[in-house]
Length: 432
Ligand code: SF4
Image 1 (cartoon, rainbow, N blue to C red):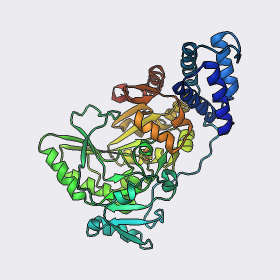
Image 2 (cartoon, rainbow, N blue to C red):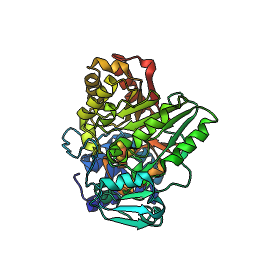
Image 3 (spheres, helix red, strand yellow):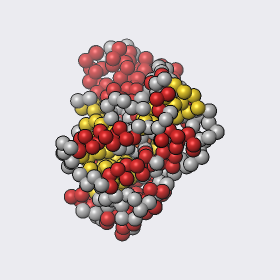
């Protein structure tokens, strides 16, 4: 970042006058300037060059553009800014873990709903954190939904809240999510929030709190799944709003789902993860209707944006272990993030991943670029202005992402590269 807030305001003011900008144009210009600044660009030179290119002359305060001309210039500027990507080559984040283990002191506080106190999962979890003071509460929302919480501070040291979910527990699969050809695609979420902190995560835009809620009434979830199974087979994702494997060391929830799924062949469960602990692959009890779906990002991107998740190397090893253990394993290169040199970075990652012959056993591969609903991106920006949240995404019917041309370029690039090693017909591209 090269400029502070007052310089950004000054630049916005100067160029707004030149464009005869309305208030909404001014806000848009400020967003573009903020993004360019976060991406490490020389903002003033960038806009001046663009202005000269577009109008054939340099800005003259005595000859501002008309409002209409200003709006057209702003559009041209935003198209140019969309081609500016952040540089992750110098990032050296070390905030990567490979799963939270038994006895970890990761949680700052533990709250338990009165009604959750007698559940076996509550006892199990509390026994793993004997040193933590437990505060009894009436309802998890009294803590989780309080307005004005500092999401990022809580992510660094979250409180754990144990609760009972008496409301809806199974949902239709969400629009941006891949259904892999399954007609009856649903998801369920026994946990709200995640131990990891990916800068692009929609949870930053979805929840008011960085604390973690675990619903301990697992059997009620199972009853709901059984009720759905009476109507039709089910493809169920159980880890979209969290990373269950990161919590497995003290919850055992994944093991429970494995046991539950074992004698329900009409149920197919996907567990998506960035956890590299590999513990689950050592268990002989992962049934054939469970798919472990590992999300991977190239090392520079994982280091820059996927705080606390397993490193690329650790996730790669976990994928190999999973495949070697005979577990149905999915590879997810989703979300792809556009950074400087993205094609080299993603190409090298794919070459490295597929250097191991066991990758031929992958169930399938999911590929998609970053996308998020327009309401979540607004809250993502409020939580933290970063190169990811500030990028000027294209809004298509409420879904924000890269422009269509770039999305196609990125996904086709990855598809072609994977196709050198793996059947392309088993690559699922997510777009909207
Ligand atoms: S691992 Fe998934 S759920 Fe967790 S923070 Fe990252 S994107 Fe969000």
